[in-house]
Picture 1 (cartoon, rainbow, N blue to C red):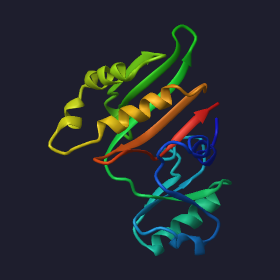
Picture 2 (picture 1 turned 135 degrees about the vertical axis):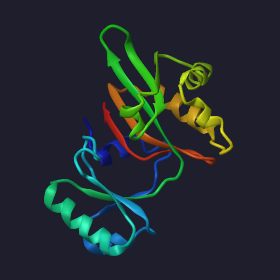
Picture 3 (picture 1 turned 180 degrees about the vertical axis):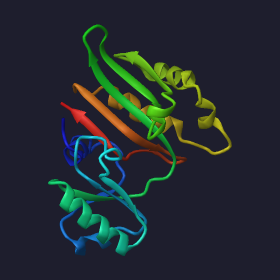
Picture 4 (picture 1 turned 30 degrees about the vertical axis):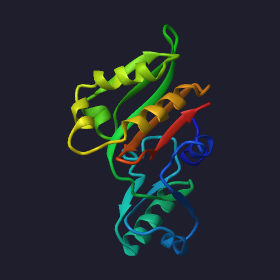
Length: 187
């Protein structure tokens, strides 16, 4: 499994929330606050206490020193992306072959398990059907406008990757774009 920075590098042709690698406390002023600080590990960052939202330089320095002591890994800061959290995934299955999933991401992935699966290959129409299968799809078509077309485009392009496993969670979907915020993948 690739770590976060390696995963972002592999996915560099896709929209990724802007990030910078942090080497020292002096690097902490690269982006405007608030931003997220996280460790470049392949595991779940929330469960590992490897991600923090930083609202000011004091919080950033405290979190940076905590992460540097706890983990032997690179640390990044990442712009805060707005929108609704979605998930895109790929996995090889012994029975069905390559499986593709989309759904509501972030903490919703485990809590409400609102996802849709397909065996690959798939096309744009099939991804549209998958979205309509989500129990809470009405959130995507509410008064707030989400660029579902960008999400479908991203999902379709991800579905064509020749990799063993991928977990993009979350992908922040907003009115302008669908932006990858976190990624775990195995080539």
